[in-house]
Image (cartoon, rainbow, N blue to C red; front, side, top):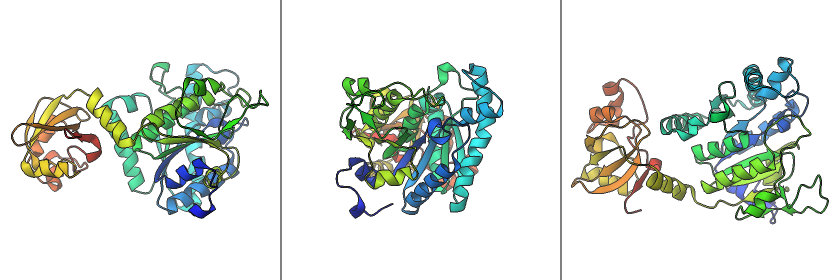
Length: 385
């Protein structure tokens, strides 16, 4: 948003934000609605200007927003501590108003908002994970702004993220974000809660999230009466994101133009990633996923894979096993040697139908249209790796 020359040299968070090409912004209920149960429209318009400017510079942005329950409880006349069914009802009533508020803020910039409601299963179960990732990436490709929230209307305690900080971390992992920005009611992490301890010192950079760092996090902010996450949940989210190769910034969100404040060197805390995105994903595929089947490829496809290409159906010569979309499968070369492993974008039955065929023939053979690769390059690892 600003040229590198205008950044504060002392701000690591600003440098990380400037370097990001794809980022997720998390906005909590306390930031979006305060304690009035209504959207802070002027603030949201300012945030929309920040995001529109980022997008104009080629940065892809997704938003994780809370606020549906906070808005819905006012519409339904609910007060005090809510039962699960009341929270679900409030969420159902508030989702419409929440989406309308975001769309109204971005309409002046000709940006279309697309709502995505997730549960924990959507990022834990591989088939649903692929579906969610494909939808988000398609929306980004089409120039829409993914607006992500937890599906509180149907989620139970067993399938909930618990708070949208963790949801934001998983969303960042899902789309391969470079940076997660969590907007907070405080300007980052302190050695103690500065609202209770005047000697608390601000921490600008965290290289490793240690038990001491985790213990420094305070509990939820009870003053606002809305929202589920405090500093502890933000640290937990940063740990998830950093482990997936995504840097995390906790920054003040109550101010106008909060992203611009980060980019121009405002106070914030940067958590450096403990891994790279590619390495984290390769470790996940290599170590945690047991192959459910296999495909054999010809010499041309094997060479293309080693050059960094996706696996297209034209190069497949045989399919073994019974597996579903999202399952891990092995890839063998022309002589049967194992050359890699990846996540299949098709069921085994459908791969058998399109094996050896051009990608532009998939729709006519299967009767539906999908991305052309059987295994996307981001979803495979080669044995040499």
